[in-house]
Figure 1 (tube, rainbow, N blue to C red):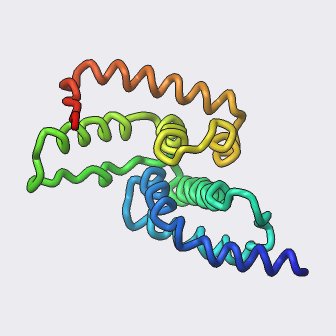
Figure 2 (figure 1 turned 180 degrees about the horizontal axis):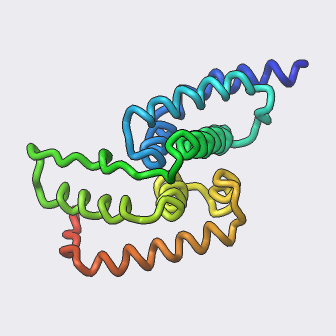
Amino acid sequence: MEGKHIATREVRQQLAAHLPRLWRYGLVLSRNRDIAEELVQSTCVRALERSSQYTPGTRIDRWLFAILHSIWISELRARHVRQGQGFVASDELMAPDTREQDETRLHYLKVMQRVNALPEAQRNAVFLVYVEGFTYQEAADTLAVPIGTVMSRLATARARLARSADALPPVKEKRS
């Protein structure tokens, strides 16, 4: 009983610190700001409801990301059933900001467009490993796939991005 209270307390204390990262992952998965917010809210509710399942002393971010991913998969399945067809991806993530059209921002937008054009499985693996800093094993656990699958997805994504990078202008390094 004591362990359950410790886990619940730890989840409550750490949840707020991970909200921006959870929202960013929700946005990567859904490509829609409103859906990302709903995913994060559902993740918070589920984490609090199931806080006794969290093992104190382990990485809570991995646990939270796994919850969010599980909710997303359930939502995709439900949407598939409701629509009677497959999920159609939205292009709402990258709205150009015409006020800041400097070279760095344009380059960033081009890179993000290429990353967003990756198939969902590759995009998710790239996000977890390269943006969130998860190990391959942590990403595999979060996505509920074998580590070899994560490695394969990353290799394929890197190759695809490298091919598309040939079309990008070279990055200017800032030396100080």
